Image (cartoon, rainbow, N blue to C red; front, side, top):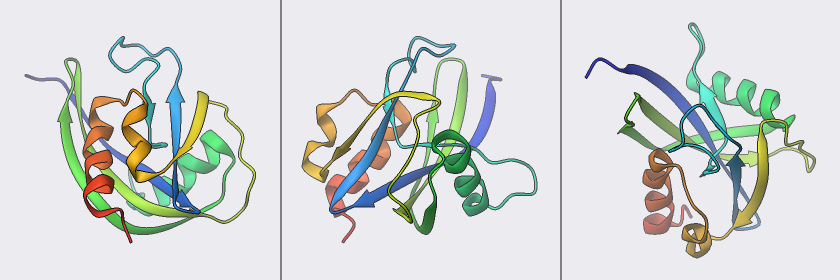
Length: 135
């Protein structure tokens, strides 16, 4: 398989014991459309993962966060591309955010995460949260 590979970061934003989950709208691929994910995006050349995450969250959500420890790094192969997803535990530094690239959001506790339909790659992060509850 000679598909494109992307290094991406995801913010596992936790507030009051709940996790911030955002729902994608329609995407280029049916298997990623209308799926929930932890917000984030691609790492640009010259950026650290932490810098990429702060930039992506500011661009997508106008949300200021602090980036903490790496929770999990997981590779996932989709039919048309593959990603290495690096998920970091984050905290919001302010209350307000704006959904500009997503169609919905929910705050869910660790035991509620499976109540929404996740993008396949993000399931590795969900499993990690369920197993550790990131205390």
